[in-house]
Image (cartoon, rainbow, N blue to C red; front, side, top):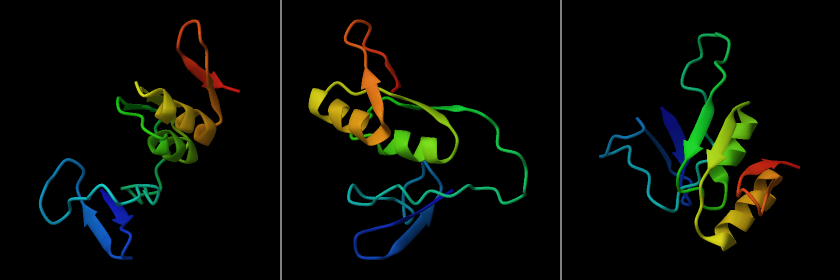
Length: 100
C-alpha cells in the first residue's frame, strides 16, 4: 500500500500496480511512503531496484527506510541530480555508484 499526497493536498491511496481510483499521476510526490504493515515486526533487509532512476526519489526514500537501492539512469543530467540528492558518486571507470 502507498499513500501519497498530490499538489492539491488531496490524498490518494491504492495498491501498487493497480489502476483505477488509486492511480497516482506524474505530479504526485512519492516521498510520503509509509510501511504497509504496522504489526511491529522487524524490518527485512532488501535492495530496491529502480531501472528509471530519474532524480533519485526512490533512492532517497529507500535510504530513509533503511533499505539499499540500485538506480539506473541513462540521462546524465538526471543521474547527476540523483547523485547529489542521495549523496552518491559515480565511478567513471565502471559506472557504479557508491557512498561518498
